[in-house]
Length: 420
Image 1 (tube, one colour):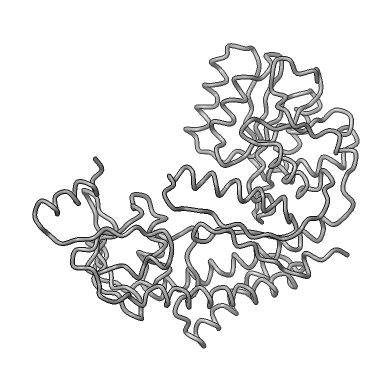
Image 2 (cartoon, one colour):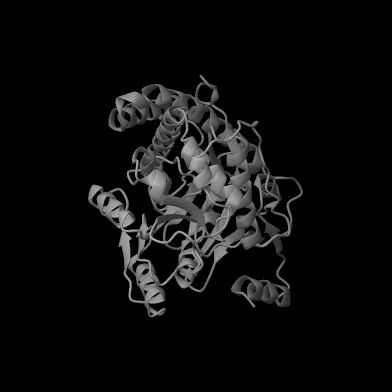
């Protein structure tokens, strides 16, 4: 029995009134009745003391009492150790709280600003990242001081750091988050414009829908580029290493791992007992890229990671970006073959290769997919997100996407989507 279940049983035995509320979406916030526990374990707890139009008054034994905005409250559940419901220690409320309405207003403000900043970032994307980032941070700071929004931007990656900051420091982090998001969207659209160039038709016949990492592989002496999905890189790489032919050296390019995971992969490779080498090259390095070309000429089996969002702007080249650069090399038209593993389905491979500019596909229509979350396990929801993302990319590759509360919001930016 989990700790929160034992707590519920104990409160029942002591005749303490309480109610458990599952938090799946914003409308569930109306059912909260403070004081309520949103997180508890043997070393820590977080209690909501009051809910008002300004947000929530939260007590934390390490931080004391602090006010949080509604979207910050929803982001509590991104932190490790939080459960998907709160425990209200009192009678249910006779009327709903204003929390859900306030949260909708906050999201509307955030989307409005994102729309304008993304447009500006797209227009400025030709001048470089540094001046674009500087101007966007200046504008977001001015907007914050002049309009004083209820919430500036929900934190996406640094929620734990933000919750431990003062209000002014938290707003500074939020400004940086939003400016970086606008930069990524702008540069993504700029990259999509470049991808309108004619695609390599010759690569179309070199994309396979069956795994090639088997001892019966007919491509003896030729390089194989195997694209893996980053949703579960460890199991994917492990399964590939167990089934590779014994006469091929293996190169893994663009690893997102720590030293422990790298050691596991080396161990899985060594357990097979074959006399060959496994090399893990870091991404985004010119020396690594030339070493990769050298291994490819020797007929190595190259494993690259095709991320779920291959167009996300970063300082490190993804496997798809590297694979796309191979099309300029004449030798790849004769010696390289692109494949996938069982963890990376044929539809996902085709969609990602299309975005990378390696194969041709017909343009389809825009679509928005909702992900059901009722009565489903966390693993099922994650898989549904992955499947919906792949369907979205296949339906309309010219665009960008991000997740928000178990929904796919696919934002259409007309100048970037229109064909020339």
